[in-house]
Image (cartoon, rainbow, N blue to C red):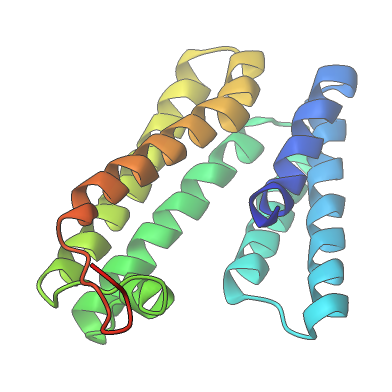
Length: 181
């Protein structure tokens, strides 16, 4: 359910684009992200930093799209977000010696220490590549194709990457003392 909630602005963007075009879809995505943050705030009294970052990026790039009536800005939004994710993962690890993937996942999965840096790096590379793919699709295909890819292509790539990660990590997962073998 959280997965669908996270995709709420993207799904509304997609539907609105198909009916009303890119500029209305952009406005809806901005509003939907504000609504999403409002909902999270009302339910938990706390909003994740990444959701705030996502809001800032959609407001800046979506706002520029609407002000200048140029869809190029909204097409850059996923790339900026993915590259920001990649940079944060990389820089937190390199500068602050903080493995953010481990911080986020340590309660869900136990892995040997040497695996965590590789997992962090693989996510940083994945997000970097996703940003490049977005630009490739945005500049080489129609807006309609880009919008379809934004929802279905990225979701498929993310799903495939997570499945691949699960398969690769399966051999490293450590059993906790209270789990039966």
